[in-house]
Image 1 (cartoon, one colour):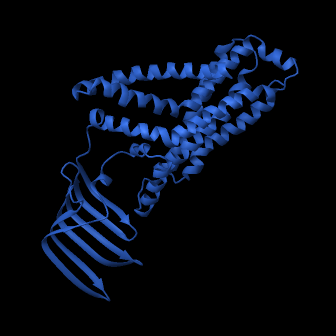
Image 2 (cartoon, rainbow, N blue to C red; image 1 turned 45 degrees about the vertical axis):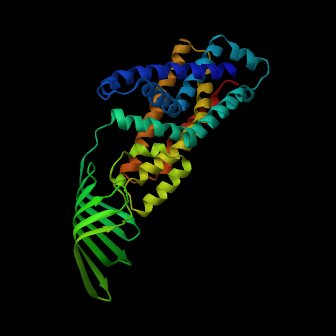
Image 3 (cartoon, helix red, strand yellow; image 1 turned 90 degrees about the horizontal axis):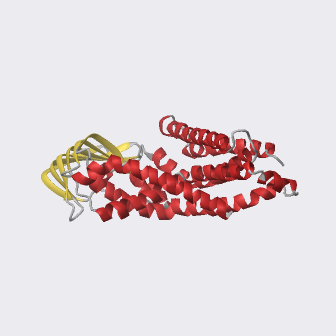
Length: 350
């Protein structure tokens, strides 16, 4: 068990070192252009970079570690000797399952609590020194901000926090209750209010229309400019409790990005669980001594790794573009590879 875990951390360190080298070569111009501090690069960015991506790919790295470690044992005929001494294959699997449980449990905690905290620092650094470009002008903004309340901007300037041709509609039981229109609205970051210029309000009561208009109005509205800025990746900042609250809030607002949020939520549980499935596959396929030795097992492991990643990509695309339930999309690769694991386990040398 100790050697297996050490092998995992060795491969993790190797892969993360290579990933950092490629990332530095890609980001170095941004670091120089925006005068990013060395301490921020090393601590705020790359330390959290390793934590995020290392944990994200940990099930696949565990899989490769299992294959590498078990292939060494099989190549030295140690697996044959262990099974010949009367130890069952199930008993042989026990240390692997203990190790997988420790690593999967750690990954689950990291996914739901620690990594989101680290991501806040990493994403803040990216927004400051790497992803400094933001689309300044949003056109045709249309969204639900609460049940029955719809807003529309012809244009919204993210830089100045100013909107043009603004409309707010209140609906109840399918009937329009009121409609507010303003030529120009501006966000006051101090008070948290909006200033409406050249506005009018139409209110409908018992079939009667009442109109109110004016030059300027300061009022509180149930949304802020931050809802029009940012990236989908910003949900990586949220721990599991914050993510659940955010999803509930976005459902009320009628967000079209709900599938992306649910994929993020379910992936945090599905990926750690895949550690068990990939461990069984890794042990079962590499416990036989084959011509070509470790290289054959590693090649087969890399092929399965690519297949697993491809399956994840395909199912998540179906969830975001074809209406597939995100829960089914995220767990389908585990189900497919779970069947493969059961088959290989049944065919493993006993």
